[in-house]
Length: 264
Ligand code: HEC
Ligand code: HEC
Ligand code: HEC
Ligand code: HEC
Ligand code: HEC
Ligand code: HEC
Ligand code: HEC
Image (cartoon, rainbow, N blue to C red; front, top):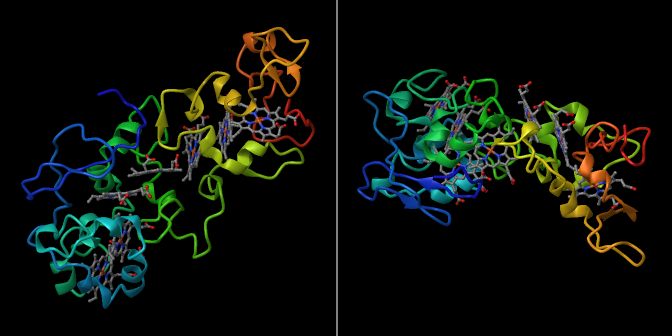
């Protein structure tokens, strides 16, 4: 299967006899995934967690993961709290506690990857955030319990600012500049893929198409047909010299304090 970045999500549920449950637009293979295993423990359902983890159970209702939750007995373990944390009976019998018969996927993303096969493939592309290497984790960009799974976990109740989850680690690119590049207002992901890419620097595209999708202009009067005009300047010869962001051109692609044309 080619490693496309299409939003396929193949979720497989063990023990259902169904093989694969399709969530998005296409199914690609049959896989069976078991929830994380805790020896001797049985599934108890979300309600059993409420007494001690009240806030998490409450906020979880609005999580995208709650959409797959079902109280159906057959679904126990494949949905809800225990799909990520493993069966809860022994944890509860022991009165709870850290490291006590419960999985915390904040330390090991394997639990997430069991279901998100496409994401797993993305992290294996030649350029990738070093998640599989254990240098960063899903929860540094995704809140597993709250309503906004696209923000980092533990960053408070405020709605995530655009680019905030990237700025935690990449301050240099996200800081304000005298001459801003307006592309940043659409977020880092207009130019970068967050998980992995075949292109250096996690770029969505590695040639001038990265820029032309916003900057393309048709040649006007007095300009040769087929010429590439950007910002009313004829770039036809310039673009043959290399990428728009190469040295000497718009190398201050994230913004500049000195050059309105983002040269340096
Ligand atoms: C999508 C997977 C997922 C689901 C579903 C999930 N959690 Fe979590 N949970 C996590 C991850 C990941 C962490 C680690 C978060 C971190 O390190 O910031 C975590 C951490 C926790 C913690 C420890 C918090 C702390 O202070 O360190 C508790 C308690 C918890 N979850 C309870 C629950 C309960 C209760 C539910 C159901 C209402 C639930 N979780 C559903 C993934 C999940
Ligand atoms: C009897 C109270 C109680 C119940 C019920 C309970 N827990 Fe806990 N749990 C705790 C306590 C206490 C901690 C330690 C929290 C701390 O130190 O801040 C804990 C910690 C955790 C952690 C973090 C573990 C770690 O190693 O970091 C997770 C995850 C968790 N619980 C999930 C659950 C889930 C899922 C349920 C429901 C199936 C559940 N708990 C039910 C009391 C409980
Ligand atoms: C039991 C399978 C399962 C596990 C385990 C699981 N997920 Fe999911 N996840 C899903 C499904 C199914 C959806 C799609 C929900 C929907 O769109 O209705 C989803 C959606 C998502 C989304 C996208 C939400 C959106 O709005 O597009 C993110 C991000 C995500 N999960 C991250 C995680 C992370 C991080 C973990 C581990 C902490 C994790 N998942 C663990 C099944 C799982
Ligand atoms: C460096 C930050 C970062 C890390 C680490 C990260 N993600 Fe994401 N993820 C994102 C962003 C940003 C998006 C939204 C992409 C978009 O909208 O174009 C996303 C989207 C997703 C989606 C929605 C489908 C898709 O691919 O667009 C899923 C599912 C997902 N992530 C799962 C995970 C899992 C599982 C992990 C850990 C194994 C993880 N992510 C680690 C930043 C991250
Ligand atoms: C938890 C910290 C963390 C977060 C959050 C994070 N990154 Fe990274 N990023 C890293 C690490 C670590 C590397 C690998 C650096 C290395 O290998 O030298 C990296 C590498 C990169 C690279 C490639 C740099 C290069 O020189 O090849 C880009 C581009 C990037 N990240 C963009 C993003 C974007 C966009 C986001 C938000 C969606 C993001 N990062 C969120 C830690 C993070
Ligand atoms: C308009 C497109 C664009 C946007 C938006 C963008 N980047 Fe970049 N980024 C690039 C390009 C192009 C490079 C490659 C520069 C090079 O190779 O010299 C790059 C390189 C990087 C690098 C590697 C180190 C460096 O500076 O060369 C990091 C880290 C990075 N970007 C993070 C981010 C973060 C974080 C955001 C959002 C705050 C972001 N980028 C938004 C185009 C963009
Ligand atoms: C998401 C859309 C988007 C993308 C992608 C994008 N830009 Fe921009 N860029 C803008 C907007 C909007 C402006 C401000 C309005 C304008 O000047 O067209 C701007 C302004 C600029 C400027 C300042 C021009 C001036 O005279 O003010 C330069 C230089 C620039 N972009 C270069 C690039 C390069 C190089 C790339 C590719 C790495 C790129 N842009 C990708 C949207 C984008």
